[in-house]
Length: 113
Length: 111
Image (cartoon, rainbow over all chains, first blue to last red; front, side, top):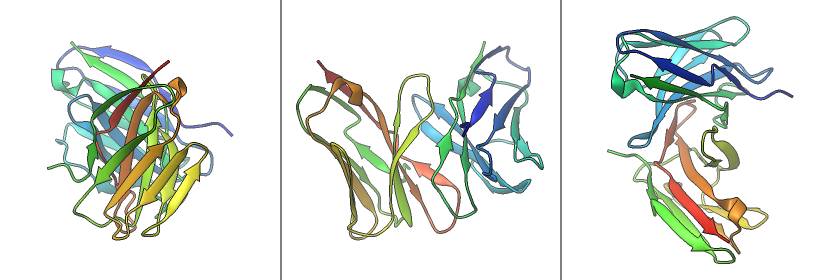
C-alpha cells in the first residue's frame, strides 16, 4: 500500500511569488491535514480537509489556503510568499473522521529567497 | 503558549544507556501519539495511547499515558544509534483531527 505522496520534494521561490503544493493520501484515507514545520516553532497545524470540506483551520494568514478534491487528493497554496514562509510543509492523511492517527508524507521543503 | 511541552529539548547519550522523554500539558487529551522523525523526512507514527494510565511497549520503547490524560512519557532501554532522531508527541482533543504537537526532543545516540 503506497504511503502519503507529496510533490514536489523541494522548491525554491522568490518573495512575492505564489506556490502550490500537492498531497496524495493513502488509498482509502479521506482526511488530509497540512502542517508547517520550522526549527523555531516546530510543527504547526495549517488546516484539515475531509470529504472536500475544510473542517479545521490553524492560526495562519489568509495567504495560506487549501482544497481537497473528490479523490481525496489535496493541494495547499501560499500566495505573496515571504521569507518567513521557508519551512518543511507536511501533509498527513487519516483513515476516518475522528481517528487522529496521522500518517505523514516526506514533506515539501520550501525555500523563499 | 505551547500546549504540549516536551523535555528535554536535546539529549545526547552513549549507546547502551537508558533515557526518558517527557510530554506535559495542562490540557486533557482524548489520545496522544508519539512520532519519530529523521532529517528530511516526515514523522513516523510509533504508538497511540488512549486510556489514562495505559502503558504500551514497542521492543525497547515503553510509552505511558498519565492517569489524567494530560501527560506522557517515552522510555528507551539500551539505546542504539538507530534510535537517533526527533521524537514528537502529539495530542488530540475530542473528535478533532487537529493534532497539537510538542516541539520535540532531539535524541542523539553515539556509538
